[in-house]
Amino acid sequence: MSTSKLLIAALAALPLLTALPTAVSAQDFAITNATVAIGDGGEPIEGGTVVVRGGKVSAAGAGVTVPAGIPVTDGTGAWVTPGLVVALSDVGVYDVGAVSESNDTTGGSSPFSAALDISPAINPAAQQMKLARAGGVTRASVVTGARGSIFAGQGAVVDTGADPDAVMKARAFQYVELGEGGARLAGGSRVAAHIYLRNAMREARAFAAGTWKGDEAMLTRADAEALGAVVSGKQRLYVEVERASDIRIVIALGREFPKLDIVLVGASEGWMVAGEIAAAGVPVIADALDDLPQSFEQLGATQSNVGRMVDAGVEVSIGRIFGEEIPAYVTQYAGNLVALNNVPGATGLTWGEAFATISSIPAKISGIGGKAGVLKAGAVGDIVIWDGDPLEVSSAPVRVYIDGVEQPLDSHQSRLRERYRDLDESDLPKAYDW
Image 1 (cartoon, helix red, strand yellow):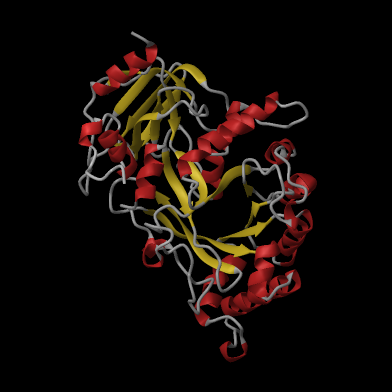
Image 2 (cartoon, helix red, strand yellow):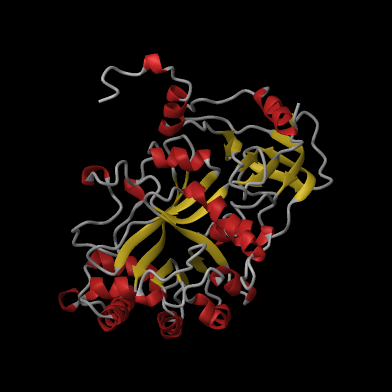
């Protein structure tokens, strides 16, 4: 029997959850003899052990002793990693993208912008949640898209567990769109977008100081109050920009408003100003591979963007997984960054660096660093058991745990697969050939 079949047989011996009630106790368990990825940027550990107790990681790595009484699974041939963390997605906020009634991906024509809070719209039972979970994604940052203003609103950090309590951290960050997109929203020019942003920051600062004059302000009271948390540094500001010159302007904004806690989003030309980004201590949520420009602000796009920024000392996470790009694709994207090392002239990442872009780094950017995305003592018991290297497209999760609770891996897609995979032609519905 092959190693993978032995693994599946061993795991099948454990009780399998097909559905979760509203409250399930965390499981104590240990996995031994597996290839373990801690998620902190280091390389995988052969023959490692992971111990989970009371819903949290107790120990992980080489030479770990399993406490007496803990159920043990032999993970020979398996890979064990922390749950994946996706920086920026729309998971759980729509059922059918083309059906507006089921779609909360933007604030629509709302009179509010910065005050918008995505948390109440998140649906734990959405199919995207199930697909993300089945792909090994256990935590994600969720945000709406900007529509009537450069401010999209306040994003949330969620878990993808099969329980009704998905929101881990509400109002975790504020999202603003600059560059070409922000220019369109602000009236057709970058000039308009930047003056609108600076004016909003000043009004928010006045609101926080108690000197805001609503009858003279452009912001609504709710928006000014929401941005007060941004200018005071209590809430991170995610800024979507692509062009190198726009990135420099955002870094300068941080000097004008020194308490701003800025995260760059996109940064297709980030490699051109990587030293400045690193010196400013600003993390980046980037697309894994932007090879060809899709707009004028991405003329300097290169597939080596992430690798060059990491080499310059920038903290980079893979993110912006929206619409048809399901969160589980991040493993493939991270794997591509490793494969770049085999492309002459390209700059890729090591395996550990690439895996960190979808585990510990997005967790840190999302404000849950040390709690998720790593297999270290005290972190949440988000564990994924894979049948092979998770950065290879041929590998898939075998078991997924969130907070130490095993999760169901079924979805609408998996049920359709099982229904039709072995269907006999005689079972096809009448008029199928129409």
